[in-house]
Image (cartoon, rainbow, N blue to C red; front, side, top):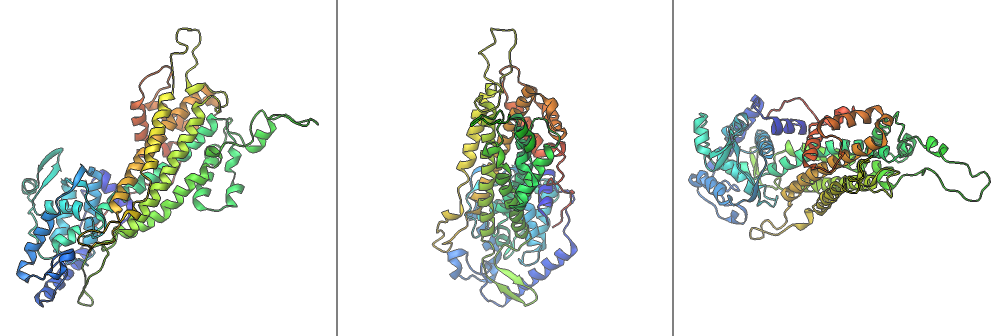
Length: 530
């Protein structure tokens, strides 16, 4: 299963999902092995023993099914806001895919019912907080498990309803759990992986939007597009840096505002023997423009390995114990430990927040008359012939303040969660991953950075209207035209929260990328199968 498939199901729904025959057969073989091993009377972790530190308590096989209900119920202690619908859908899909691999020993009806929830868009109400991401995302996944056994509340057709009532209305039988079913549902990384998968896709669109932002800022500030020349970046060949610089070079092709290096140089007078002179136009831009590929390139390169890690994660058996059908054995281990998820998300957080900071610095240059090469202060519309209006308007001053706030919040949440491991559960879980915290932070940072990019785009388009859009390159001009379909030029002080929201939607939908003719967007056919 791909991250593209996860995004499609999470954001468009999973009405066409199927339980593949090969997966169904594998699940049946695994369950048969589990039942056979139970009959031998041997202790099997979480099946005929207690959980965690209580592993030393062995129970009779006759109690194994009831034990699973207790497991689900005693973890229903989540707090905080409910996870967004798209995250819940992704969680259901990833968990189904994990269990369908046929290593978990659960009854096949468990996977089928997870897919039924997606087909009918019946979404468990899952609080975000309460998991340390080590013995799986126990607390949030228990809310999924409770729904399958007909308990708790779900969101269905826009209403909050009793899970059992909705299942009955749809003609779906609640799962009667048998040994290992509850543990198979909750003992894994699916909740963290859901947040992570969607954050990756959002960050990929941010990477493209950030390069578009930089291109517009370079034009607005009369920049030097020679900074993005291939020779420079081919000689420091980090792939993400080369990609970002190449895109900027292409976006600015044909611009009469952001000029090639030799043209910038030619705009300045010769010294003609004088010992000193002052350039009319600087031959080097400030770092936030000149080094933009070196910042956004880090995000692009981070995304390559982060996507690889998370693709492995969503196609893995992440619960415990696992049943080896070929060997006829059961194995206890720690595949529920979300170490790769947390490391990936901590890295993605830092790289994305750094891009927010980059765009905020570019915005500061555009609104500050000391640095914006002749534009008005705060990009105020020039008032002609009306003395009364002069001095009343403040343009993008408030927008820059808001952008600075969003950037600060993104940077604040970029600190690593990995290092905050807490010993818990009677020191059985004495080293934990904290992956769900990192993954939630990554989602928050992508949301904040997307809003930063939206404000930047609005300001850049305002600056270019003041500068003169006739000098823009064809591709940046197309972006400007798209922005103007949802956000008009600011000719007088007005509220702009609606403008920000509209441009955020353009970024999220990939419309900015399409307008700029960027072809490597993160989209995929609407196909997915457990």
